[in-house]
Amino acid sequence: MQTKNEFLLGIDPGSYKTGVAKVKPDGEVISAEWVETKTLTEVLTKLNAECGAAIKAVIIGNGTNTKPVHKVLGQVFTGVPVIEIDEKHSTEQARTLYWQLNKPHGWRALLPEGLRVPPEPLDGYAAAVLVKRYLEQQKDRD
Image 1: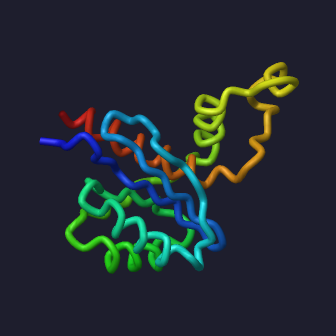
Image 2: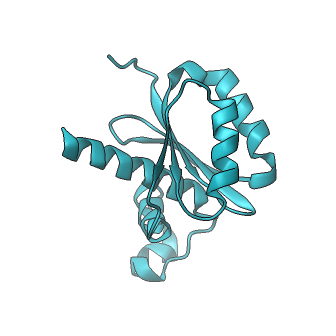
């Protein structure tokens, strides 16, 4: 049984920036942001203190910097499953997700999607893409 506030935490690890996303079990993105990787332990510890009981699972990409970040996750989120997932092409999908969640205005709306450049780093959206992939895989298994 899931509680109303449950979510999955997506992590897209990188050398300098790490994407962090909260996604509801139905796939709705609650938040998508990036943090400096050097502050990740502090950010995740604070997140765990604020809403640890609501975190159903942590989904992490298997690319750059996965091993050290995986270690941090294991220390911060004890008792929460940490699941690695393939992150190939997640940045391209993150761009599409960004524009789905942040409809372009003004002259940006006139550009084809492939020519639009988001005004912020996409790491958080890539983390959300990883959670959505995980949810799709789970749906396919059911």
